[in-house]
Length: 437
Image 1 (cartoon, rainbow, N blue to C red):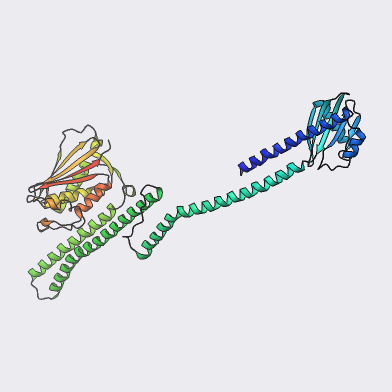
Image 2: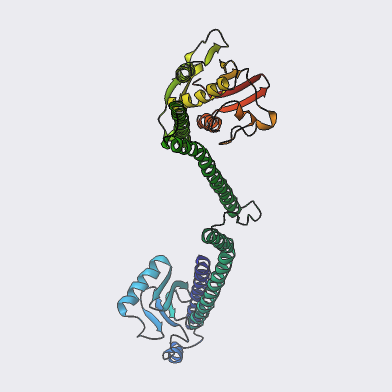
């Protein structure tokens, strides 16, 4: 648009300047004719007096003293206008002006008989026609260009939004069919839409994994709950018969209490698992000391089982700064995590003894839980952190398979890591947590 306006203004000025130059020549010719007595001014006046300004410019000639020498028409300008133009030309030597659609050019010309003040006014019919044609051409060109731009933009917009339309249809199919196995086309995997598709596919994969894990969790929970509940129902039906002895009654009550404690333990573990699924920013945290956490975990485990023996060892004799064994965390969940590790270590050891080693490296506090029990098979090490997984050692002690998975989730929530190394007669779980250094 600005280019078209610039082109038009350029040619418009050029046409007007050309006509001013032609007015200059016309005035000079008539001055030359009159000054040299080539043509009598009355004859010249008769020739041009009735000629329309659209065909021939009207020329007015004055002497330096203000005497009118020649005029093509007396009806073109008023006397007042003529005097103003006369004064302007005499002062500046040159004058260009517009009167309506007419152009006027004035100048001083030195003739044989003296100095003349000359003005020529006319209408540039040919130039105006050319400008009208130019306006029409530029207007048509502008409309054509705009139409081409609109069509091009529509085409490119359609091409650009086609992948989005396909993605929208795919997402609708996923929603309507409840099929989390469907994936979006990732294209060249380089542009922004490809990155969006990749991100969405990753989200679908995570959702699918979460739903599968949820189904597996519900299945495992049902299985874990059914076993003790069935045992409780069976024992209560037996004692409800009324034909059992007092000893059988006591044994039945003992089994019911044992299964009830197992259910309570399972319920508490599931509640702790739910808490551990929150982010660290969503739960209350404060600065805690690792050694105090371990002491409290030991106290609570030994209160439940008097046979458990736990020894806490500081691998470094002196700690130059308390921040080496301090971190920002949730005290309750950390105690739960280390209680599970202590319980497993003592439970699967014939002497019910374990060691807790506290050390540090740079910005990490390191806690190692060591026992000399039956160990874990190498092929089972990758699965022990899965919820409800029970290895071949499950016959050695009771459990529900939640403890280690819960512990791993709590440690990872605190931006830490847990690793295990085991051989028959020696097992060590190593926990690394960021300290306050």
